[in-house]
Length: 435
Ligand SMILES: [Zn+2]
Image 1 (cartoon, helix red, strand yellow):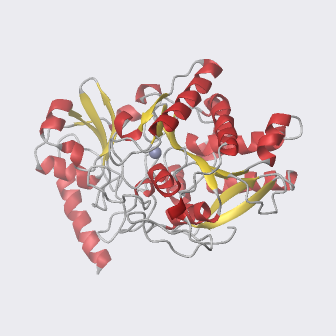
Image 2 (spheres, rainbow, N blue to C red):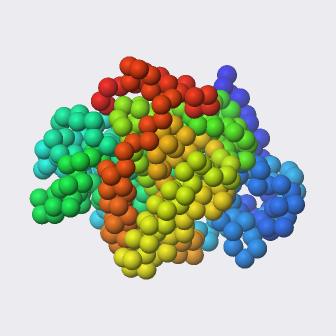
Image 3 (cartoon, protein in one colour):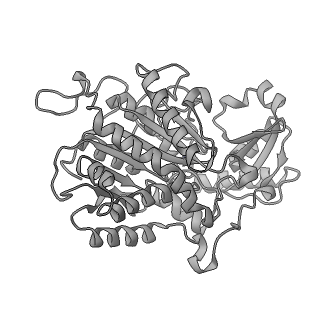
Protein backbone atom coordinates (compact mmCIF):
# COMPACT_ATOMS: atom_id res chain seq x y z
CA UNK A 1 0.00 0.00 0.00
CA UNK A 2 2.62 2.41 1.11
CA UNK A 3 4.73 1.78 -1.96
CA UNK A 4 1.72 2.19 -4.24
CA UNK A 5 0.87 5.45 -2.58
CA UNK A 6 4.41 6.76 -2.72
CA UNK A 7 4.69 5.70 -6.34
CA UNK A 8 1.53 7.61 -7.19
CA UNK A 9 2.70 10.71 -5.35
CA UNK A 10 6.10 10.40 -6.98
CA UNK A 11 4.45 10.36 -10.39
CA UNK A 12 2.37 13.42 -9.57
CA UNK A 13 5.48 15.13 -8.29
CA UNK A 14 7.38 14.21 -11.44
CA UNK A 15 4.61 15.72 -13.53
CA UNK A 16 4.68 18.92 -11.47
CA UNK A 17 8.44 19.14 -11.74
CA UNK A 18 8.36 18.63 -15.46
CA UNK A 19 6.14 21.69 -15.70
CA UNK A 20 8.56 23.98 -13.87
CA UNK A 21 10.46 26.17 -16.32
CA UNK A 22 14.20 25.83 -16.00
CA UNK A 23 14.04 22.50 -14.19
CA UNK A 24 15.39 20.02 -16.68
CA UNK A 25 16.41 17.36 -14.28
CA UNK A 26 14.98 16.43 -10.91
CA UNK A 27 14.38 13.08 -9.36
CA UNK A 28 14.29 12.24 -5.69
CA UNK A 29 17.45 14.25 -5.19
CA UNK A 30 16.16 17.67 -6.12
CA UNK A 31 18.03 20.80 -7.11
CA UNK A 32 19.91 23.75 -5.69
CA UNK A 33 17.90 26.91 -6.21
CA UNK A 34 18.27 30.53 -5.16
CA UNK A 35 15.58 32.97 -4.12
CA UNK A 36 15.76 36.72 -3.76
CA UNK A 37 16.32 37.44 -0.08
CA UNK A 38 13.54 40.03 0.22
CA UNK A 39 11.12 37.60 -1.39
CA UNK A 40 12.40 34.85 0.89
CA UNK A 41 11.80 36.93 4.03
CA UNK A 42 8.49 38.39 2.88
CA UNK A 43 7.09 34.92 2.34
CA UNK A 44 8.35 33.57 5.65
CA UNK A 45 10.39 30.86 3.90
CA UNK A 46 12.88 30.83 6.78
CA UNK A 47 10.27 29.02 8.82
CA UNK A 48 9.50 26.29 6.30
CA UNK A 49 12.24 23.85 7.25
CA UNK A 50 14.09 24.30 3.99
CA UNK A 51 17.70 23.15 3.74
CA UNK A 52 19.47 26.48 3.62
CA UNK A 53 22.83 26.39 1.93
CA UNK A 54 24.02 29.97 2.08
CA UNK A 55 23.26 33.62 1.50
CA UNK A 56 25.14 35.47 -1.18
CA UNK A 57 24.64 38.74 -3.06
CA UNK A 58 21.12 39.21 -1.84
CA UNK A 59 20.00 35.69 -2.66
CA UNK A 60 19.29 32.71 -0.41
CA UNK A 61 20.48 29.34 -1.73
CA UNK A 62 18.54 26.22 -0.87
CA UNK A 63 19.08 22.51 -1.45
CA UNK A 64 15.51 21.85 -2.54
CA UNK A 65 13.95 18.42 -2.51
CA UNK A 66 11.44 17.62 -5.29
CA UNK A 67 8.67 18.32 -2.77
CA UNK A 68 10.27 21.69 -1.92
CA UNK A 69 10.47 22.52 -5.63
CA UNK A 70 6.85 21.62 -6.15
CA UNK A 71 5.67 23.74 -3.23
CA UNK A 72 7.81 26.72 -4.27
CA UNK A 73 6.35 26.42 -7.73
CA UNK A 74 2.79 26.06 -6.42
CA UNK A 75 3.24 29.14 -4.24
CA UNK A 76 4.61 31.03 -7.28
CA UNK A 77 7.90 31.85 -5.56
CA UNK A 78 10.36 33.02 -8.20
CA UNK A 79 13.53 30.97 -7.98
CA UNK A 80 16.56 30.22 -10.13
CA UNK A 81 18.06 26.84 -10.67
CA UNK A 82 21.69 26.90 -9.54
CA UNK A 83 22.58 23.22 -9.47
CA UNK A 84 25.20 23.41 -12.20
CA UNK A 85 27.16 26.09 -10.35
CA UNK A 86 27.79 23.65 -7.56
CA UNK A 87 29.44 20.96 -9.65
CA UNK A 88 27.24 18.35 -8.03
CA UNK A 89 28.25 15.19 -9.78
CA UNK A 90 31.98 15.40 -10.07
CA UNK A 91 34.31 16.37 -7.34
CA UNK A 92 37.43 18.29 -8.16
CA UNK A 93 40.56 17.55 -6.20
CA UNK A 94 39.97 13.82 -5.94
CA UNK A 95 42.59 11.38 -7.14
CA UNK A 96 41.20 8.62 -9.38
CA UNK A 97 43.35 6.07 -7.56
CA UNK A 98 41.20 6.50 -4.45
CA UNK A 99 38.02 5.45 -6.17
CA UNK A 100 34.90 7.60 -6.17
CA UNK A 101 35.80 9.25 -2.88
CA UNK A 102 39.54 9.67 -3.37
CA UNK A 103 41.47 9.94 -0.13
CA UNK A 104 38.27 10.41 1.86
CA UNK A 105 37.07 7.40 3.83
CA UNK A 106 34.08 5.23 3.09
CA UNK A 107 32.69 3.08 5.90
CA UNK A 108 34.74 0.08 4.81
CA UNK A 109 37.90 2.15 4.40
CA UNK A 110 37.36 3.54 7.87
CA UNK A 111 36.96 0.09 9.38
CA UNK A 112 40.21 -1.07 7.77
CA UNK A 113 42.00 2.01 9.09
CA UNK A 114 40.63 1.60 12.62
CA UNK A 115 41.49 -2.12 12.77
CA UNK A 116 45.04 -1.29 11.67
CA UNK A 117 45.37 1.32 14.40
CA UNK A 118 44.07 -1.17 16.95
CA UNK A 119 46.50 -3.84 15.77
CA UNK A 120 49.48 -1.46 15.81
CA UNK A 121 48.65 0.03 19.23
CA UNK A 122 47.00 -2.76 21.24
CA UNK A 123 47.64 -1.08 24.60
CA UNK A 124 46.11 2.20 23.55
CA UNK A 125 43.45 1.66 20.90
CA UNK A 126 40.32 -0.39 20.73
CA UNK A 127 37.68 -0.54 18.01
CA UNK A 128 34.20 -0.58 19.50
CA UNK A 129 31.01 -1.24 17.54
CA UNK A 130 28.44 1.17 18.91
CA UNK A 131 25.55 -0.18 16.91
CA UNK A 132 24.21 -0.59 13.40
CA UNK A 133 22.70 1.84 10.96
CA UNK A 134 19.32 1.25 9.31
CA UNK A 135 21.04 -0.51 6.41
CA UNK A 136 23.02 -2.66 8.87
CA UNK A 137 26.35 -0.93 8.59
CA UNK A 138 28.42 -0.83 11.75
CA UNK A 139 28.89 2.46 13.56
CA UNK A 140 32.47 2.38 14.78
CA UNK A 141 34.16 4.13 17.64
CA UNK A 142 37.87 4.19 18.35
CA UNK A 143 38.56 4.31 22.06
CA UNK A 144 42.00 5.65 22.96
CA UNK A 145 43.38 5.51 26.48
CA UNK A 146 46.29 4.11 28.49
CA UNK A 147 45.27 0.53 29.44
CA UNK A 148 42.55 0.77 26.85
CA UNK A 149 41.14 -2.65 27.64
CA UNK A 150 40.22 -1.51 31.15
CA UNK A 151 37.25 0.75 31.93
CA UNK A 152 39.05 3.15 34.27
CA UNK A 153 36.33 5.72 34.81
CA UNK A 154 38.57 8.48 33.48
CA UNK A 155 37.08 11.62 31.98
CA UNK A 156 35.86 10.86 28.49
CA UNK A 157 35.90 13.22 25.51
CA UNK A 158 33.89 12.59 22.35
CA UNK A 159 34.90 13.60 18.83
CA UNK A 160 32.21 12.76 16.28
CA UNK A 161 32.00 13.27 12.53
CA UNK A 162 29.64 12.75 9.63
CA UNK A 163 26.22 13.25 11.12
CA UNK A 164 25.60 14.82 7.75
CA UNK A 165 26.47 12.54 4.87
CA UNK A 166 27.89 15.07 2.41
CA UNK A 167 30.30 16.62 4.93
CA UNK A 168 33.19 14.31 4.08
CA UNK A 169 35.91 16.38 5.75
CA UNK A 170 34.16 15.84 9.08
CA UNK A 171 35.16 12.15 8.93
CA UNK A 172 38.82 12.90 8.38
CA UNK A 173 39.57 15.38 11.17
CA UNK A 174 38.53 13.16 14.11
CA UNK A 175 40.11 10.11 12.46
CA UNK A 176 43.42 11.94 12.01
CA UNK A 177 43.26 13.05 15.65
CA UNK A 178 43.12 9.38 16.64
CA UNK A 179 46.07 8.53 14.41
CA UNK A 180 48.06 11.47 15.73
CA UNK A 181 47.52 10.53 19.38
CA UNK A 182 48.51 6.93 18.77
CA UNK A 183 51.53 7.61 16.58
CA UNK A 184 52.93 10.32 18.87
CA UNK A 185 52.18 8.70 22.22
CA UNK A 186 55.63 7.18 22.57
CA UNK A 187 57.52 10.32 21.60
CA UNK A 188 55.48 13.06 23.25
CA UNK A 189 55.18 13.29 27.04
CA UNK A 190 52.33 15.79 26.64
CA UNK A 191 50.27 13.38 24.53
CA UNK A 192 51.16 10.50 26.84
CA UNK A 193 49.83 12.52 29.76
CA UNK A 194 46.57 13.40 28.02
CA UNK A 195 45.95 9.86 26.80
CA UNK A 196 46.80 8.28 30.16
CA UNK A 197 44.44 10.56 32.04
CA UNK A 198 41.44 10.36 29.75
CA UNK A 199 39.36 8.21 27.45
CA UNK A 200 39.17 9.68 23.99
CA UNK A 201 36.25 8.39 21.96
CA UNK A 202 36.33 9.01 18.23
CA UNK A 203 33.28 8.25 16.09
CA UNK A 204 34.26 9.41 12.59
CA UNK A 205 31.10 8.22 10.81
CA UNK A 206 27.84 8.51 12.71
CA UNK A 207 25.82 8.24 9.47
CA UNK A 208 27.35 5.44 7.36
CA UNK A 209 24.28 4.85 5.14
CA UNK A 210 24.11 8.49 4.17
CA UNK A 211 27.85 8.61 3.53
CA UNK A 212 27.73 5.60 1.20
CA UNK A 213 24.84 7.21 -0.62
CA UNK A 214 26.88 10.37 -1.20
CA UNK A 215 29.71 8.30 -2.63
CA UNK A 216 27.66 6.13 -4.93
CA UNK A 217 24.46 8.01 -5.71
CA UNK A 218 24.15 11.66 -4.84
CA UNK A 219 26.98 13.78 -3.47
CA UNK A 220 24.65 16.30 -1.81
CA UNK A 221 22.74 13.85 0.38
CA UNK A 222 22.51 15.05 4.01
CA UNK A 223 20.24 12.77 6.05
CA UNK A 224 20.32 9.07 6.90
CA UNK A 225 18.44 6.64 4.64
CA UNK A 226 15.24 6.06 6.61
CA UNK A 227 12.34 5.17 4.32
CA UNK A 228 9.64 7.49 5.62
CA UNK A 229 5.91 6.83 5.76
CA UNK A 230 5.22 9.25 2.90
CA UNK A 231 7.68 7.55 0.57
CA UNK A 232 10.49 10.05 1.05
CA UNK A 233 13.89 9.17 2.45
CA UNK A 234 15.89 10.28 5.40
CA UNK A 235 15.88 11.75 8.87
CA UNK A 236 18.28 14.58 9.71
CA UNK A 237 20.05 12.85 12.55
CA UNK A 238 21.40 16.16 13.80
CA UNK A 239 17.77 17.07 14.58
CA UNK A 240 16.90 13.72 16.16
CA UNK A 241 18.55 14.06 19.60
CA UNK A 242 16.34 14.24 22.65
CA UNK A 243 16.88 17.68 24.16
CA UNK A 244 14.12 20.10 23.12
CA UNK A 245 13.45 17.78 20.20
CA UNK A 246 10.88 19.37 17.91
CA UNK A 247 10.87 22.58 19.98
CA UNK A 248 9.54 24.42 16.92
CA UNK A 249 9.25 23.94 13.18
CA UNK A 250 11.95 26.48 12.40
CA UNK A 251 14.94 24.65 13.85
CA UNK A 252 13.76 21.32 12.46
CA UNK A 253 10.90 20.10 10.30
CA UNK A 254 8.01 17.70 10.91
CA UNK A 255 7.86 17.07 7.13
CA UNK A 256 9.58 13.80 6.18
CA UNK A 257 10.70 15.12 2.79
CA UNK A 258 12.48 18.08 4.39
CA UNK A 259 16.24 17.99 4.61
CA UNK A 260 15.95 18.94 8.29
CA UNK A 261 13.27 16.34 9.11
CA UNK A 262 13.58 15.46 12.79
CA UNK A 263 12.09 11.95 12.67
CA UNK A 264 9.03 10.53 14.37
CA UNK A 265 10.43 10.72 17.91
CA UNK A 266 13.64 11.66 19.74
CA UNK A 267 16.26 8.99 19.09
CA UNK A 268 14.00 7.23 16.61
CA UNK A 269 17.11 6.54 14.50
CA UNK A 270 19.66 3.84 15.32
CA UNK A 271 22.49 6.25 14.52
CA UNK A 272 21.55 8.76 17.23
CA UNK A 273 20.64 5.93 19.58
CA UNK A 274 24.18 4.53 19.19
CA UNK A 275 25.73 7.87 20.18
CA UNK A 276 23.34 8.18 23.08
CA UNK A 277 24.18 4.73 24.44
CA UNK A 278 27.90 5.48 24.27
CA UNK A 279 27.40 8.85 25.91
CA UNK A 280 25.36 7.49 28.79
CA UNK A 281 27.77 4.65 29.45
CA UNK A 282 30.80 6.84 30.19
CA UNK A 283 31.61 10.01 32.05
CA UNK A 284 31.84 12.46 29.16
CA UNK A 285 33.23 15.87 30.03
CA UNK A 286 33.55 17.52 26.65
CA UNK A 287 32.69 16.91 23.03
CA UNK A 288 33.06 18.20 19.51
CA UNK A 289 30.72 17.30 16.68
CA UNK A 290 32.39 18.08 13.35
CA UNK A 291 30.45 19.38 10.39
CA UNK A 292 31.18 21.47 7.33
CA UNK A 293 31.25 24.08 5.97
CA UNK A 294 31.73 27.72 7.10
CA UNK A 295 34.57 27.84 9.68
CA UNK A 296 32.57 28.30 12.83
CA UNK A 297 32.80 27.10 16.44
CA UNK A 298 29.27 26.91 17.85
CA UNK A 299 28.09 26.26 21.38
CA UNK A 300 24.59 25.88 22.89
CA UNK A 301 21.92 26.84 22.78
CA UNK A 302 20.91 26.09 19.27
CA UNK A 303 17.17 25.72 19.87
CA UNK A 304 16.73 29.29 21.14
CA UNK A 305 18.96 32.32 20.95
CA UNK A 306 19.52 32.51 24.70
CA UNK A 307 22.54 31.85 26.89
CA UNK A 308 23.04 28.61 28.79
CA UNK A 309 23.95 28.70 32.47
CA UNK A 310 27.60 28.43 31.36
CA UNK A 311 27.64 30.95 28.56
CA UNK A 312 30.84 32.69 29.70
CA UNK A 313 32.73 29.41 30.08
CA UNK A 314 31.62 28.13 26.68
CA UNK A 315 32.47 31.42 25.04
CA UNK A 316 35.92 31.43 26.65
CA UNK A 317 36.69 27.88 25.50
CA UNK A 318 35.41 28.57 21.99
CA UNK A 319 37.46 31.77 21.84
CA UNK A 320 40.59 29.93 22.94
CA UNK A 321 40.02 27.22 20.35
CA UNK A 322 39.45 29.81 17.65
CA UNK A 323 42.71 31.51 18.62
CA UNK A 324 44.61 28.22 18.60
CA UNK A 325 43.26 27.41 15.14
CA UNK A 326 44.14 30.85 13.78
CA UNK A 327 47.67 30.56 15.17
CA UNK A 328 48.43 27.55 12.96
CA UNK A 329 48.09 29.20 9.56
CA UNK A 330 45.78 32.13 9.99
CA UNK A 331 42.42 30.48 9.27
CA UNK A 332 39.65 32.38 11.02
CA UNK A 333 36.90 30.34 12.65
CA UNK A 334 34.15 32.58 13.98
CA UNK A 335 32.72 31.48 17.30
CA UNK A 336 29.51 32.09 19.16
CA UNK A 337 26.23 30.72 20.37
CA UNK A 338 24.81 28.45 17.70
CA UNK A 339 21.42 30.11 17.44
CA UNK A 340 23.04 33.54 17.30
CA UNK A 341 25.79 32.82 14.83
CA UNK A 342 24.03 30.42 12.49
CA UNK A 343 20.29 29.80 12.74
CA UNK A 344 18.19 27.92 15.25
CA UNK A 345 18.38 24.14 15.27
CA UNK A 346 16.54 21.86 17.62
CA UNK A 347 17.38 18.27 18.45
CA UNK A 348 21.06 18.60 17.62
CA UNK A 349 23.94 16.77 19.24
CA UNK A 350 25.51 19.55 21.27
CA UNK A 351 22.29 20.94 22.74
CA UNK A 352 21.61 17.41 23.91
CA UNK A 353 25.09 16.85 25.35
CA UNK A 354 24.96 20.16 27.18
CA UNK A 355 21.32 19.81 28.18
CA UNK A 356 21.97 16.34 29.54
CA UNK A 357 25.37 16.66 31.15
CA UNK A 358 26.21 20.37 31.29
CA UNK A 359 29.56 19.79 29.59
CA UNK A 360 31.41 21.96 27.09
CA UNK A 361 29.98 20.81 23.77
CA UNK A 362 30.80 22.33 20.40
CA UNK A 363 29.87 22.02 16.77
CA UNK A 364 32.84 22.87 14.60
CA UNK A 365 31.98 23.76 11.04
CA UNK A 366 35.16 22.96 9.14
CA UNK A 367 36.48 24.78 6.07
CA UNK A 368 35.94 26.11 3.57
CA UNK A 369 34.39 29.37 4.61
CA UNK A 370 31.82 29.46 1.81
CA UNK A 371 30.66 27.86 -1.37
CA UNK A 372 32.99 29.92 -3.54
CA UNK A 373 35.84 28.13 -1.82
CA UNK A 374 34.31 24.72 -2.47
CA UNK A 375 31.37 24.34 -0.10
CA UNK A 376 31.01 20.70 0.83
CA UNK A 377 33.86 19.79 -1.52
CA UNK A 378 37.29 19.87 0.02
CA UNK A 379 40.30 18.99 -2.09
CA UNK A 380 41.80 15.83 -0.72
CA UNK A 381 45.15 17.66 -0.69
CA UNK A 382 43.67 20.01 1.93
CA UNK A 383 42.66 17.29 4.40
CA UNK A 384 45.91 17.26 6.32
CA UNK A 385 46.17 21.04 6.66
CA UNK A 386 42.59 21.25 7.94
CA UNK A 387 43.39 18.56 10.50
CA UNK A 388 46.64 20.34 11.50
CA UNK A 389 44.91 23.63 12.13
CA UNK A 390 42.31 21.93 14.34
CA UNK A 391 44.78 19.79 16.27
CA UNK A 392 45.83 22.32 18.95
CA UNK A 393 42.19 23.15 19.67
CA UNK A 394 41.29 19.47 20.02
CA UNK A 395 44.26 18.83 22.33
CA UNK A 396 43.31 21.90 24.35
CA UNK A 397 39.77 20.60 24.84
CA UNK A 398 41.07 17.19 25.96
CA UNK A 399 43.32 18.95 28.48
CA UNK A 400 40.43 21.13 29.62
CA UNK A 401 38.23 18.10 30.20
CA UNK A 402 40.98 16.36 32.16
CA UNK A 403 41.55 19.39 34.37
CA UNK A 404 37.93 20.28 35.00
CA UNK A 405 35.97 17.74 37.00
CA UNK A 406 32.72 16.70 35.41
CA UNK A 407 29.89 19.05 36.21
CA UNK A 408 27.68 16.08 36.92
CA UNK A 409 24.53 17.72 38.16
CA UNK A 410 22.94 15.92 41.07
CA UNK A 411 19.72 15.39 39.16
CA UNK A 412 21.65 13.44 36.57
CA UNK A 413 22.23 10.23 38.47
CA UNK A 414 20.29 8.39 41.17
CA UNK A 415 21.96 6.74 44.18
CA UNK A 416 22.77 3.64 42.16
CA UNK A 417 24.63 5.81 39.64
CA UNK A 418 21.98 5.46 36.94
CA UNK A 419 20.94 8.41 34.88
CA UNK A 420 17.77 10.17 35.86
CA UNK A 421 16.52 12.57 33.27
CA UNK A 422 14.63 15.80 33.55
CA UNK A 423 11.65 16.35 31.27
CA UNK A 424 12.36 17.22 27.67
CA UNK A 425 15.45 15.11 27.28
CA UNK A 426 13.75 12.11 25.82
CA UNK A 427 13.14 8.49 26.48
CA UNK A 428 16.20 6.46 27.49
CA UNK A 429 16.42 2.85 26.51
CA UNK A 430 18.72 0.21 27.98
CA UNK A 431 22.19 1.49 28.65
CA UNK A 432 25.13 -0.71 27.73
CA UNK A 433 27.84 -1.08 30.34
CA UNK A 434 30.85 -0.53 28.11
CA UNK A 435 29.81 -0.40 24.50
ZN1 LIG B 1 26.33 19.32 9.14
